[in-house]
Image (cartoon, rainbow, N blue to C red):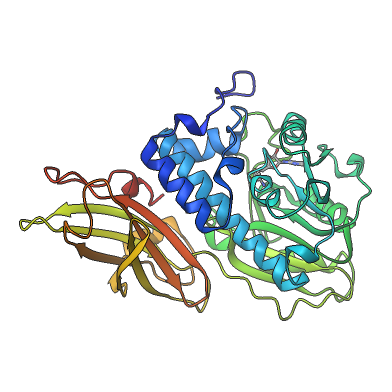
Length: 399
Ligand SMILES: C[S@@+](CC[C@H](N)C(=O)[O-])C[C@H]1O[C@@H](n2cnc3c(N)ncnc32)[C@H](O)[C@@H]1O
């Protein structure tokens, strides 16, 4: 896909029915209406077509599931900010999703807030126009230059997901200053970055604390304004200190997406010292084997990225009903390379189900239950008796 030749839109109707069933179940577990959420993915969405899809070998069904998973993880972080800072979604005024792209978060937020409470902004004006037309939210066109970005609103939550992680030094400071001015008196600015812990091998952090690489998933944004940047906490702390003296701010390692750190900065006088925010546990099935007695043995991996938390158990549901639970006890150092700089070691788990427990075609759902209070979910389908097979998608789900 290029800016001139976008992919065709991806409708969820095109997704393999097995994955569609996983997606619908997953959304319902999070209290999200699948019909409203599963609007087609616009072919110009670079986040989906240039980042997620190639990561899953251009399998659109797996990628659609991964898109939904990532949206729910984003939603879980957002929920914790809404609850931890304001006491819940019903206490929020207006919110701005800056660098919203094509509205991965809007699909969820429109189910939590009224459309007139939601503002979205992006340099891709067609993405904003699509969101305005599709969700009825307020759209703001952004610009390359923060000085000409024209928006005067004040918001309770200004979220900037995965934009500061792509900015060179000067723009980092300029956008931080510009977006902080949009935070209302009781509000917060929340933004994600690539921490130095995930600096690619062979790269060396600059003395300034921001290291900028001239590549990105975007096929149209100029590399002078959007590449890949990696920062130290000292760099971000100093950038926040330039906004105003004595601001309360917190860093949540791996707080957003798979590997980005989330920083939350309060408006003057807003104390964030009590804010807690955990990352959703991640994991997936990797194999299912049919044993000689016909039982099925499933195995998979999981990682808890929240410092100090652990995945205490994996509970297994078949067709929606709980069947058994296991404590993950296998070391999986091979998984760590996908989660560099993670506070906790990845773990493996396995369990057996008889054919009575898991008939062919049954949906098997593993709940990765964390001591943080959050749960991750992963899915497999019980195979036909004659097959002895990997579940296929899950090995790739390691990415
Ligand atoms: C990696 S995507 C993240 C999209 C979205 N936050 C999400 O999680 O799906 C980065 C987004 O930053 C946007 N962006 C880059 N420079 C921008 C600017 N100057 N103003 C507004 N948006 C910008 C890009 O257009 C793109 O949509």
